[in-house]
Length: 203
Ligand code: GRF
Image (cartoon, rainbow, N blue to C red; front, side):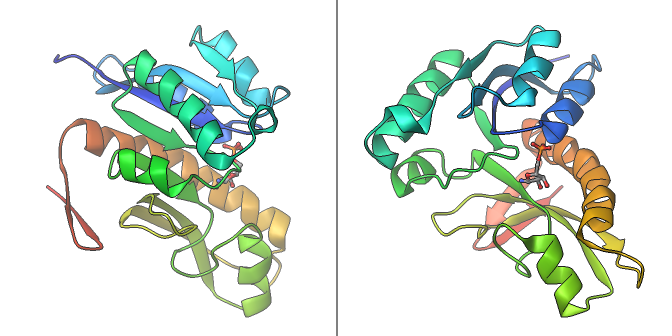
């Protein structure tokens, strides 16, 4: 087994996706390991998940910095010091500055609870229900400066039933998020992803 690729996971809340990555990384042949978890919220339950898993974790609060760039520079310093070669935003509720996105271009992933480019933004499930779509889902993508933009790595679709509401759709989508995020990281760690323009090819 070659050396596992160290990654940093950034969170703000419950850490469902973080836990899925922790679980996947327990497998000896999973090609990545979590070197650092950072939350911008001290009360993020995901920090308890990192602690329980014995993973180094820190709180870096955006409130302690006077600008997005200064906050991002603090994030970058810790991430770089951890040796992480990939940054995974997992329920991280802050928009990254163009500076950070450029520095980590194509080594910075995010997961969004819709089939991008549909339903960008913070109320994806409500928007999908209101639009009457028959399928929704989730997307792992490389981050670009514009919110919820960037080359798509993996998607998973779930049916939207007449009986669904935002909460039931969230549950179905979240279950799929926990499948595709670890897989996207695995493919990156195996060097199987190739970006051409706005498309990601996996071999
Ligand atoms: C998830 O729906 C994810 O798609 C979005 O943040 C939500 C919460 O994620 N980015 P988690 O439970 O903190 O992983």
